[in-house]
Image 1 (cartoon, protein in one colour):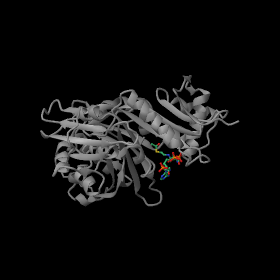
Image 2 (image 1 turned 90 degrees about the horizontal axis):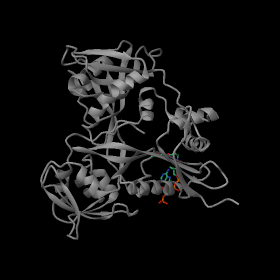
Image 3 (image 1 turned 180 degrees about the vertical axis):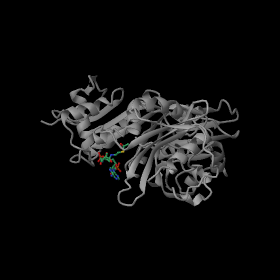
Image 4 (image 1 turned 30 degrees about the vertical axis):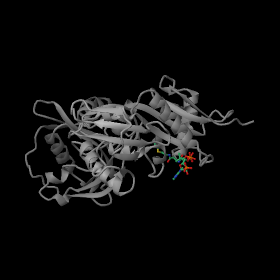
Length: 422
Ligand SMILES: CC(=O)SCCNC(=O)CCNC(=O)[C@H](O)C(C)(C)COP(=O)(O)OP(=O)(O)OC[C@H]1O[C@@H](n2cnc3c(N)ncnc32)[C@H](O)[C@@H]1OP(=O)(O)O
């Protein structure tokens, strides 16, 4: 007899670079749901080993040892304006193609969110394959990215003098060791950015991801820029997107570019735009406020080819999240938050009169704004304007001008940005 499906969670056990049988079965279901390659058992065991230290959840129906649905999560440090919080990063939500539309996504996700809230994470984050899946679970779209394309023939730099030195770093471990501290500094500038576990670094630098069986992308290159004292100030990971054989001009795609200073940023772009045989440089997930066009004498060297949704944020603990960030103006507003899963529901007074120590308290006062938890997730990093959500009927202003006051309170010092899908 087949049992009623239940959610189980476990941590991968790894010996000698290979994961245990339960993790292998989990990995097989997850890859199949994402239309991934059918891997040999030893490849699956290697892929599963990359999940060491993470939480795996699955929906199981005995006696089948493989799950019907999967989810993987781990803790990240998520930048918020003026600070950072621990967040539950979620990925790998997949349901067997034979078992869809029976509520399995909902079961495994709500279980993970409830566990994260219980463990004290103020928020959960994910990037999604589809745009309409996660609002019903309280996630709000919080950041966007811009897809850029640079025509290298038009890219003349205003500042003609290169500075510092560049190095192509061949060994991935050396590249990661150089890139990590730069990324760590750079990520604090953008709310929505987060630190990276080793598996994500491998994905970015080597191109070895679960969905390609950890096969390295041999067209990937890491270039580090150093200042005159030899200190690394920025790096770029790029890959060949289209060879030059057909057109005589190749396309290079930026995978990750982080610069701790404006000079590092300029010099990395100078390098990208001056490579022989390269006609176009693209960046699929740049920030929406890149200074790039301003580096060139002709800003039309850069085209924005698309703007895309990126990070979804689910508030789990309203006071913890709102007090972790800083506010640019002194004001106080009462927010009533509704939440179908009941995790963040309540009426809260956010008081930012003390700019260094904002306070959030439960209150019975009349609310200035009533909003569902997903709208709070959208506006909390400062990347979505509460007035726009009010105009869209996604939140309700109960006192005159409250959405505008909230917009001024939540404004972020720079545009929220997360450039890495996970
Ligand atoms: C963070 C991430 O990992 S994003 C990756 C998401 N996964 C994928 O894209 C892999 C391929 N797809 C799948 O594995 C599955 O179809 C999933 C995970 C998207 C959905 O799983 P299911 O178990 O079928 O979803 P479930 O039955 O729990 O549906 C929950 C709700 O979402 C809705 N829904 C499910 N899939 C979709 C979809 N593709 N588009 C729109 N709505 C959807 C359902 O109608 C249901 O709505 P309701 O609450 O109003 O009834």
